[in-house]
Image (cartoon, rainbow, N blue to C red; front, side):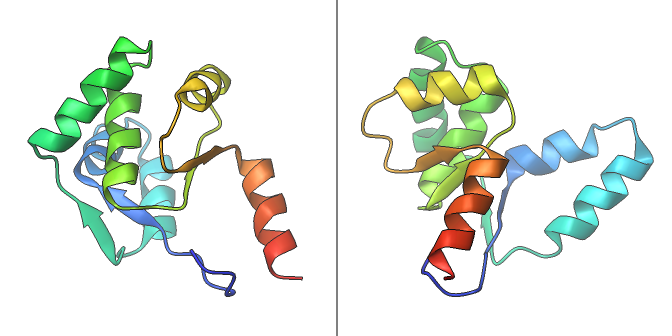
Length: 115
């Protein structure tokens, strides 16, 4: 992402699966409205699944590993998570090619970039 005032969200087949399986309809509607229609939508493929398997071997949960592998495949600049355990494990993996961050860190980074 450039330092422009624009944030582009990336979605994936994995995220769609997770949203579709939410039991809370209000939460599901909120997330769908927030995501809108993403410009970038990543479908699972063998390369993503293989990369996710390496993340699982690093101690990351399967669904989280798929989310991370999809973000990398999309060439996203940031992967934002509020899961502290996942955050620590993902940050420990070398050469991810993506900045794993938390919501407060991302807001700070984006605010700083727009000064």
